[in-house]
Image (cartoon, rainbow, N blue to C red):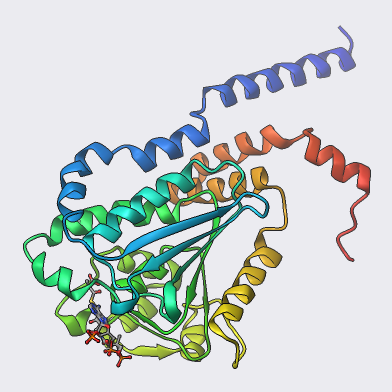
Length: 312
Ligand SMILES: C[C@@H](C(=O)O)C(=O)SCCNC(=O)CCNC(=O)[C@H](O)C(C)(C)COP(=O)(O)OP(=O)(O)OC[C@H]1O[C@@H](n2cnc3c(N)ncnc32)[C@H](O)[C@@H]1OP(=O)(O)O
C-alpha cells in the first residue's frame, strides 16, 4: 500500500470513528426538553394550590411573521405584582414558547407602564405557609424561561421590584426606560430571593456586585443599573410607553434576531447546554454535534454562494 492510500485509510477510519462517537451523544433538543419538563409531575399539587390565589393574568402573543413573541404581566391595579394564578399562567405560556419552532425572540413586559412590583402582597399574605412550594415552582418556571430557545429581553418600565427584579434576571437581556427603577428589595421585606435571582445575579454580574445589590436593597435608576451591568440598554428620554415597546422590539430584532430561526434556536440551545454542564468536554462535544448538523447545509451553501463580506 502506498503512502497516499495509507493516509487516506487512516483519515477515513478517524472520520468514521468520530461519526460513530457523535451518534452516541444524546440529541441536544431531547436533552433540553427532558430538562425543562421532567419535574412537572411533582409540581402538579403546587400548581393546583397556587392557582387558587386568583387575580391578574400572564398573556402571550406570538407573531409568526416576525418570530417575536410578547409575554405580558397583566395585573395593572397592583403594578403587575404576581399572584399564584399568574405564576401558573406564566408556566403555561412558557410551555407554548418551548414548542414554538419558528420563534426567534421574546419580549417580557408589564401592562400599563410598569414591569412588576414583585409578589402580589395580597397573595403573599395569604400564602405565608407556602414559601418553599412557591419557590420550587418559580425556580422551575424561571429556569425554563431562561433556557427557552429564544433570545429574551425584559422591558423594564416604571417599577421593577423584589420578585419583579428576580423575574428580569431570567431573561437574556434587559432594556430599561430612562425613568424606570429597579431594586432587589427582598432584604427590606425580611426575605432573601425566592425566585432564583441570587444564583442568576452571581452568574450575570459576579459575586461582589450580586452581594452589593442584594444586601443594599438599593433601588437603582436606569443609569445606575446600566453601570452595574444589570441592564444592557437604556432608552432615550421622552418616548411614550408604546414607543418604548417599539424601540425595545427594534433593539432585539436588529441586534439578535435578524437570522434564521433554526440557527438562532440552535445557538441559544448550545449556550444553555454549555451553561448547564459547565464541563468543557461535554460542552465542546455538544458544540461539535450542533456544528455538524449545519455544516454543508442549505444555509451555509447559500452564504457561500452569496459571497458574504463581513466588513460591510
Ligand atoms: C414576594 C417577594 C419575593 O421576592 O419573593 C417580593 O416580591 S418582595 C417585594 C414586594 N413588593 C413590594 O414590596 C412593593 C410595595 N409597593 C411599593 O413599594 C409601592 O407601591 C411602589 C411600587 C414603589 C409604587 O408606589 P406608587 O406611589 O407609585 O404607587 P402606589 O403605592 O399607590 O401603588 C399603586 C397600587 O398598587 C399596589 N401595589 C403596588 N405594589 C404591590 C404589590 N407588590 N402587591 C400588591 N399591591 C401592590 C399599591 O398598594 C396600590 O394599590 P392601592 O391603590 O389599592 O393602594
